[in-house]
View 1 (cartoon, rainbow, N blue to C red):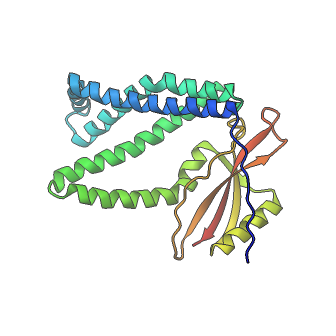
View 2 (tube, rainbow, N blue to C red):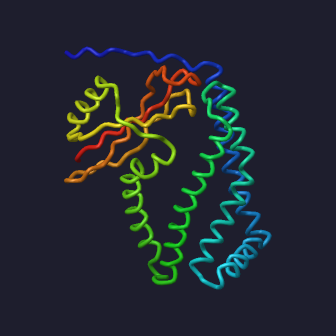
View 3 (cartoon, rainbow, N blue to C red):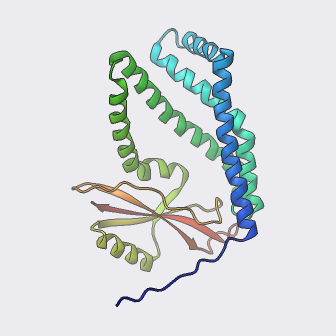
Amino acid sequence: MIETETITMPADSAESRRYNRIKRWLGIGDFALGLGLLIVLLATGWTGTLRDLAYRGAAQNYSLAVFLYVLMLMLISKVIGLPLDYYGFRLEHKFHLSNLRLRAWLWDEVKGLLVGLVMAVIVVELIYLLLRQVPQHWWIIAWAVFLGLMVLLAQLAPVVLFPIFYKFEPLENEELKRRLIVLSERAGTRVRGVTAGTCRRKARRPTPPSPGWERRGASSSPIPYWKTIPTTKSKRCWRTNSAIMCTGTF
C-alpha cells in the first residue's frame, strides 16, 4: 500500500490578494482600452483616415502601407495605454516586487514595442497576402501558417527574444547545473549546456515558468527554466530571478 503525504499550502496574505486583485483590474482595463480604441476607430471612420495616411506615406505601395497602418495603430494604442503601464510599474515597486529604475523600464517598453511591431507586421502582412492570393481559402491556410509560426517562435524565443531583455551567462552553481542535467536526462533530453539569464534590478519575485515546445528528433533547442536564486552580487536587490537555459537534443 502506497502512503501519500498531504501538503497544506499556506493561504495568501491580504497584501498578496490585494496585489493580485489590482493586477486583474489592470488587465481588464488594458483590454477595455484596446477594445474601445478599435470600436472608436470603426465608429468614427478614423480607421479610414489612418488607411489613407498610410497609403499616401507609402507612395501607394500596398505592403508598405500595411506596415505604416500597423505602426500608427500600435503607437496610438501604446500612448493610450501608457498610463496603465506606468501604474503597473509603480505597483510593482509599491509592493516591493521590483527595483527596476524608470529609465530601464522605459527602455524595456521600447524594446517590447519594437518586438511587438515586428510580429504584428508579419501576421498582418501574411493575412492580407493570403486574402489577395487565395480569397476563398485564406483562413485555413492562415491557420496552418500561424501554427507553424508558433512552433518556430517557441524554438527561437529562448535564443532570439529572451536575450533582448535578459543577459545570459554560464551557470556558476555546479550543484544546480548537475541537478538540471540529471532532471533533463530523466525526461529523455541530452543536455549540452546550461546558462543562466539574470534579471538583476528588474524583479524581486519569482518568475512563472516560461512555456516551451518539445519535439523529438536530432535538433538542439534551449529549454527555459525559471528559478529564483539568492544572490549577494547586487546591492540594489536582495534576490534575482534567473532563467536557466539548458541546451540539449530532443
